[in-house]
Length: 141
Image 1 (cartoon, rainbow, N blue to C red):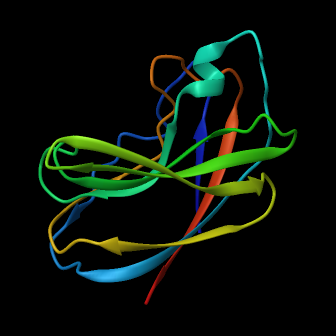
Image 2 (tube, rainbow, N blue to C red; image 1 turned 60 degrees about the vertical axis):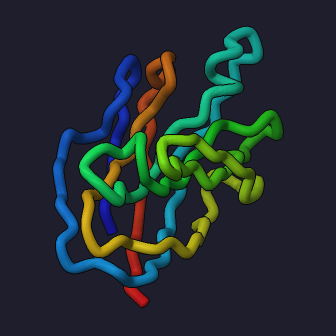
Image 3 (cartoon, helix red, strand yellow; image 1 turned 30 degrees about the horizontal axis):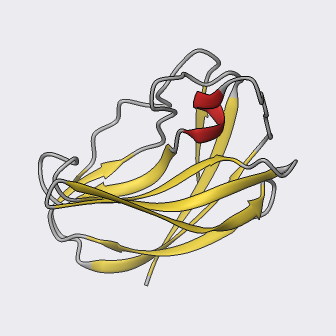
């Protein structure tokens, strides 16, 4: 398990770079959050989709990539989870579901043969309004 902290006022938990050279398998990504936050007066925080985990399929992730996205739900104690993709430079976002913040959420993804790992990122434009702990477990199938 890996733990990532995005501190209040920041966008990134890490600037780690992990290239993928021998991927090509399905994985299960499990994650959970330590807190829920809602500021109904800040549209950016309620509408922007933050990035949780994913993979770029090339050297530029805004061309071809697949990530799990999230935002704090309007339901107290929950997060909205999305599949967040770029396919040929076109962004595609679809809701996967709404989950409790302290539950382990499990999503199957494809890890490409070549590319790099995309780590937790808060934003859009607004940085994290609170210290946020994200725990992630990867299971290779």
